[in-house]
Amino acid sequence: MTSIIKLEMEKKTFKKKGFSILQDFELEVEPGERLSIIGESGVGKTSLLNIMGLLDTHYQGNYKLFDSSVKDLSQNKLAEWRNRKIGFVLQESALIHSLTIEENIKLPLLYANFEKDPAAQDHFKRIITRIGIESILKKKPLECSGGQRSRAVFARAVIMNPQIILADEPTASLDSKNKEIIINLLFDMNKEFNTTIITVTHDLDVANRHERIITLERNE
Amino acid sequence: MRILRFFITRIFLKRWILVLGMVLLLFLANYLSFTAARSIISTFQGNEQIETLNQEGTFIANLDPDSKTEDETINVEKTRKLYAYLDKKYTYALQVHGFVTSLENEHEMEVTFSYINEEAYKLNQLGLSQGNHLTFNYHLNQDQIPVLVGAGLAGTYPIGSTIEIKDPVTQQVVNLDVQGVLEKNTYRSNFYAPNSKNYYNFAMILPVNEEFVQSAGLDLHVNGLMDIALLDSTDEEARNFKKQIQENLGMEFNLFTQQENVKYFEDYYVYSLKIICTITLLLLIVIICLATWNTLKSIRLMIKDFTINLAVGLSYSKLRAIFYGYFGLLISINLALLFAITAFNRYGFWLRKENMLATYGIFGLISMDWLALLIVLFIDLMIGFTIVELTIKKIKRIPISVGVLN
Image (cartoon, rainbow over all chains, first blue to last red; front, side, top):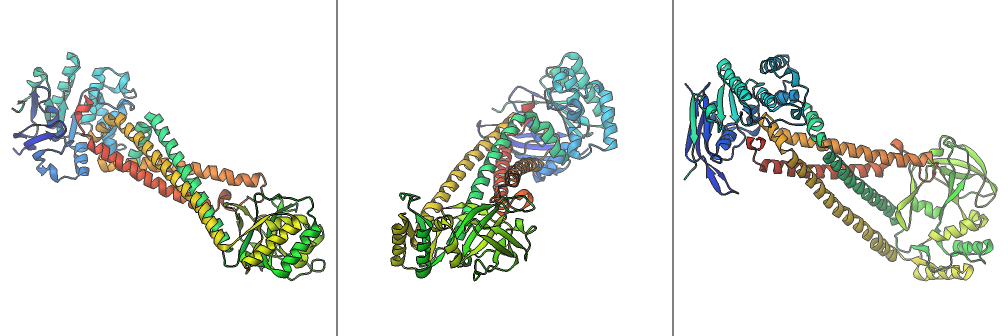
């Protein structure tokens, strides 16, 4: 099967801080794969996610996403792919506090110009019903519980039906019940739509439920 | 447009204090630039008018600041004698403006009579929208006096109409015959404050000849001396005239030569323009720095919001367009505000019936106002460009990472 992600990292350097991470590191991910990335703090897990999520293009190495070299893509193309092909499942705090839950979830639709699209509206309704957050749509994030906010972040990540979901500590600060809900939602997406799931986590219990685990280690 | 609206209403306005700060800073920059630009344009216009007098052999009279302004012994016999001497020995330009008269008209404004002799008329080259230029060879008590009327009086007193009125300077009943209509917003600048001017929209220009001058009263004679210009004269002739004034009226006058005038205008007005420009520039730099600081501060406060937006599909080019749209809106609001203030000021002259300041235009705005607004727009575009590009540069320097969201 062709890899959806083919990353050949030479290194990622933080010039101001004067150190490098992710040196001589290779990663291939297949469509529909469930991959977990673990490792101690500061080893580069989030940086790797930034690179794979097209947020960071300042590194040495080659990154092919959907068979296209990322370094050849324009800033606009990168933004378009972040909007349509990649969904970020982040911690529950990753919501804009001045917007309602509905506005937060619909943010990707705004950039895709699908805000008024009937099909997108139907999709939105299906997602919020499934996730069970109909009652909080008009509320602001700070008026909701941590679990509700996590589900809203998840809804925003899947609103464009992306091919890849990048999850950064999605269950941190959640109780066991809400942790289970989020993990199940992620894996349901994987089963139904063959969505590739890449999860960065400290939680070995969460990591063990993925098909493959990668452990990042600090460079000597 | 939807994204811009979204950003303005849902992101920027949620930190309204920063938006308000930016509006105030921009308004300060706009008002300052507008005032400076208008002052410079007005001074430039005034200098252009004065420039017609800056010729070889021209001496402009100017009451010495140390001279007593009015001698109790001055009487009309003495001033007539002085003007008779002037008519005999000199070519001179005489223009006296400001004799306010009640003369019925559709705008219910008072009318200012402005007296001008042939030499001053030639120098001033007043533009007409209709009719013919003035002639000066009339006889005061026999003929109708040809006059020009300001644009505001043309409706009530069209060309060919006659007006019987007691003339304020001769105190005689005269018949005025309207010969022509001045162009809208014709003005006369003050010789010694070129950025200050009177508008002729509600003025009547009366030609003055030797006979008229001799029939006029003390007001015209003395006021006429204040700005009188000797033409085609020599230093000696100027000195003689100065002596005549002193002997006849006991007043001390200076008669500046062309070189002295040019030097005076350059020293005084060019210097004051330089001061205005320097102060404006310095204040603009301070305001731009404050505005940039304000924006960068906003960015720091909104970095989480920007990161989320970038993660879900916002691009830097869209963000740049959003910022340009945002600043475009702020600039439009400020320009509209500036326009409203200027319109309120200009239209106020009409409402307060200030006949020497009432001007024609949209809400009374004249060419110098529009030009100043255009300059402000240009300055705003430069400010907007500087701030947006600095902001985008700053945002691009901040590594976008999902890490800031945790």
